[in-house]
Length: 106
Image (cartoon, rainbow, N blue to C red):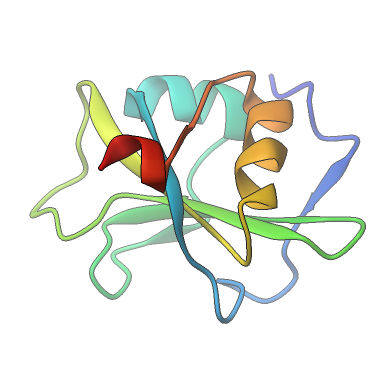
């Protein structure tokens, strides 16, 4: 059961427009489903699954795989997108998982 939903709501229109890669989180598909529920979109353009979230203040973040033939089930470096690095903080508050900034990963 997802218990972190109070500060966030599902984005009303599919994927938020204009988001870009902000960082990563190394975890499993099962861990993401446990914290965010079933993926919101399957078999998208260059993704097999993704979650799209929008905060009450308008900030958005997405979590997705990238250019994979099938959805990674084991540990994987999941992409976190947003309009700024604030998306990573929102992701962390929501899931309790620690993302890595894109600049730290390089």
